[in-house]
Length: 312
Image (cartoon, rainbow, N blue to C red):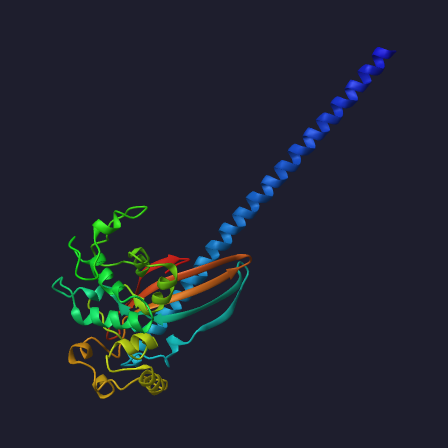
């Protein structure tokens, strides 16, 4: 009888262990399945967000194309410059919202213009860059450092340059780019460039193909002031009020009467390069989408030349 009781006890314990193990396995499988479903839904929402962002990009391209046909100048009073409010995205497959804005990249200083068409330093652009840095309370030495970062040789310019001999001594070591920048965020690698300085500079500079002009109609106040050594903060405030309605007159020499001729040749009231920032929210997934758009003159094609997620 004692043996029988022991056998029943062992059988009961075994049954309980099997039940516990089975329940644990079932809970684990259910949890893994829930995670797999969630991962799949996040990927689906992300893909939907991308499609919505690309739809917004297509819409903006059409607006820019129509604007290029209808208008001879580009300014902040035009439709493309209006910030896109949060618009609902609601259909059978997608529920969310999209918001965004378009910026004229030619309202910023193109750092690739530091090198002219002959591959040499453009002193006019260097001096403008130095003025911009001073206006922003940054070290003007960054202008020379940027030139050395993108020029083709390994010779440090005087007095503000730095080449591989400086950068290979850092931790971790790296080398200069020695070609035109593809993305302006590469300036974060300059010797002495900290995050605070970079964040201050970033809204006022861009990296476009060489030879682009600056559009005073869309230029940031700091870039606008850097165009003319004779401009101070009060004069810039006056210029900003003048351009509010429809930008400056097409003949910019009428407005910038004290500007040096060599600087006047580098500005234009029309633009070709624009940047879209679209933010799409689908369920709990947020997609931040950037694209650089090139608009050809005279009603030509409008094309996307660069896309990125999360950062410019």
